[in-house]
Image (tube, rainbow, N blue to C red):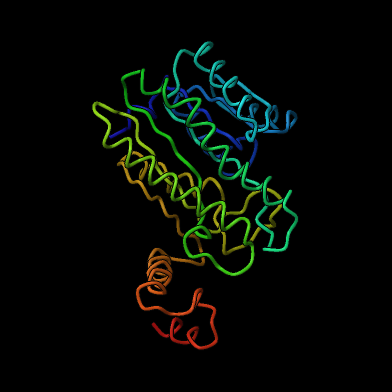
Length: 267
């Protein structure tokens, strides 16, 4: 059964929409007859992305870390289109950075990967609620925000924060009287996007979207995607092991600890 927010005539606002998962989602929803609002920083890439769509669209070149610009975007969407049914906070910055990186890098990555979703929710959600019909807020997280592998500290922290925020947002929405808007967390597997070279272990953005949409339709909050290297069972073991560090008082990140890594591999 198709979700009301994902039907012909509905409006989807997608950040980070000029490439990768954002563009693949825009293309899939455009085929359904939805009106797509493409949001990205690069005007030329936005125009190229829009040319691949099958239906009506708007393009907005902007920095999602600008809270004021996000309000302007929401004003434009509701003024010109009259509605927003899906808000996908998908824009992300750098999958790199350690504890010693410059504070500017920390601030910029946190602004794009975490605060932009908060800004978007503040700008769009009140008006989505006022519509009185089903709506979706979909935030793109990461497995690195759950299992927290060593390295890429900045990215891990931002995606961990986004996971917690989205869980709390959905808790608030489901306990709000007559609320028809729901929040969801998309957790991609290894996906070949942007500058990444083709790799047989990774999924294409289109494969990920084909996996994501049926789960979004049925109302799953956690949409944790496998890939050609990691199965759903492997993901479950890794996540359970990460929680087990707390429960069993093991060293943090014991999956990579010399005293524990073989035990993990043997499970």
